[in-house]
Image (tube, rainbow, N blue to C red; front, side, top):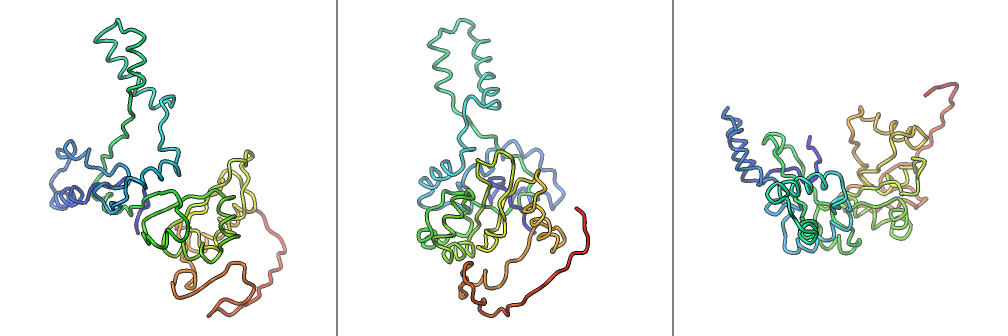
Length: 267
């Protein structure tokens, strides 16, 4: 089983060296200082996500994931910033207003490096989050470790306009659906809509035990609550075509009806 973690994998050569030392029983703690900066930070500079137009995709990733754009008003960034300012003030307590503004304007956030055990690093399945380029462009690139995120409204629009293309997109790579920002009451949408398109990560507001959340719990109980459920064969094979809106039976699948009579129950 692989672990899906974003940007938390050592560079291949560092991972191999540290893992060999670990398996031989040699303590790798002494090597961490030299290898801290070797952790994969953003978009795998020397890892599996490196390719020719990496710079463009990095810009796309920043747009698709605003959490990567660090604001100096953020608490963590301010602590780092004020720590640097405090050091400057200790060295020179008579900074002018212009010098203080220059310190603020010249500050550049540096992401925390990853000090990860090589055995855990070897279990990481690397994915690269990018801004959705469109179905045709994604098919042309055919890069399986690219993952895009969609709000429920955007995903529903894609599903209505290009249902078959959305299903085929999810045969090659991952998609993540998240609730729209307007759900201030933490309500949920019906996840089955996007499961029908093969979307792998359909996020819900877990704090709300409504019908969509109960449906989500019931679906994954089918596989022992392990967190994964294999999609049907026709939603994985490239030689099969599936339209989520079609009323005709799916090729190779015999339609069946199931009736359930509920006498009583509780949640």
